[in-house]
Length: 372
Image (cartoon, rainbow, N blue to C red; front, side, top):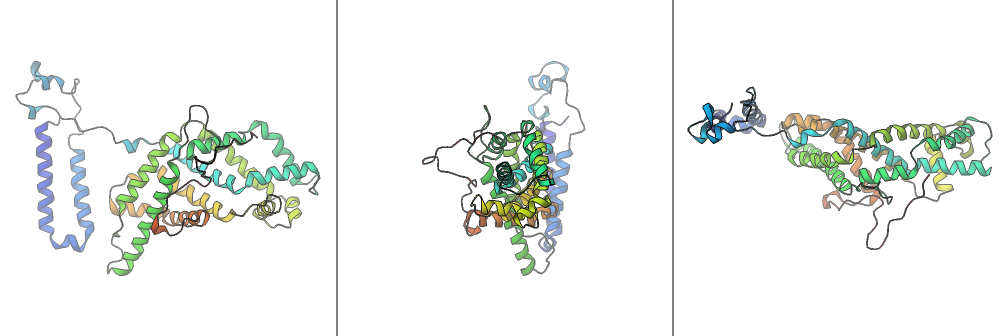
């Protein structure tokens, strides 16, 4: 049982140990910054592990504190001092964040027009405009339409996007709230990661020891990641996991349908992506954002999957930097695509982040999308 006196003495000894090691190593600390990190990590580990092996008394030390019975102590310094509670940031379950990552991937593909293209092809097929009859594409359009009653509707999907990301203008289900802070937090995290590795590349050039830890701030990256992770903690409850499994299968079915030979022949297309762009430009008169949104889908999902792991909780600078390298290029790619898509301009000005379909609440009222 760790008492108040034991805890205070332990912290005093740890402080003295830090000071003594700093004096002994002297100039070696400035020559090799990793020595200071090793000292801090090992001493912090000793402090964290002290007293963890002893179980607390049944009354959590209350009898000793108030002076009752045989456990009464003569002074306050002899009473038990609790170490603390579990950290908040370690209570996020990775399974739900992985579901959110897949839902973001689905959202970007829906925004670039995959499902709208299939719906347009269904309309053209029913009107007899497409020269299709019994090929794999025609049969795929028929089956895609017949299965609609068994799937989440368009409104269901858009309501999930609103609840998880704050995107769109369809209200979330009754009792749910739109997650408006997601986009600014997600943009900020990707920018911090991109800035960190830009600083690292600069430091690798101007310093003699290019493999030393960079002078970028891992505290800013870590804090922005924890903020985003905690934001998604409650947004990932509910039917998000089930919906993403179903709609991921639906997305795969739609892309396979658009790759059917008879459908590609209708538009002189080589790939299903060519079919999507032909339909969007020929029939819907929409500007093409296919490449931008598809890469945002891939890179955004990888960044969110990284947050689902416990890497962001790593305190050691060297290890954190090594783990962060996994998403360095994805974050840079997402920021570049986001700036090209939204006209964000120079990254150094850090423009305010807004959802893609942001509308001023003072001038535009939200409109409901038809179910289907």
